[in-house]
Length: 120
Image 1 (cartoon, one colour):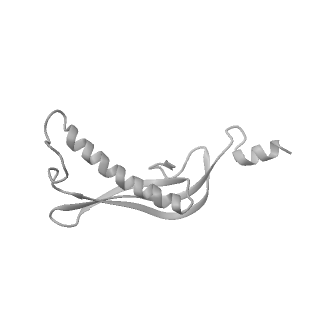
Image 2: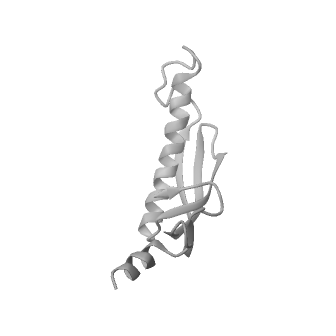
Image 3: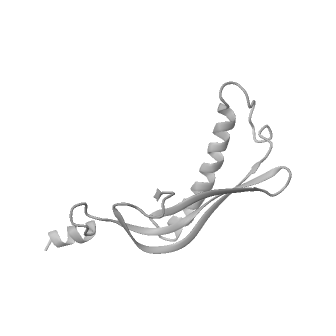
């Protein structure tokens, strides 16, 4: 699954737009309740890993939804977050699920069309 923050895919034609997809991850605002031992000890390694894992969970959920809809790519991916209690926060990854077909580099024709034409 190709996930990009851009609105288009150079070298691909978007043939079908399947709509918005999102993935949501709830996380504790207290890093120690989330299992971190320390926010110190170098350049924030523990906290950085925690933040990366939280975003990765949200992106993973978004990808699963896109695949269930039949997409092979998500364009315009963004993150959003909000606090929904004093102790919990929501991380959201969202974008547009699409079906994208690679273009042949020299002629601009679809790769699938080129392979079909070559077998005739």
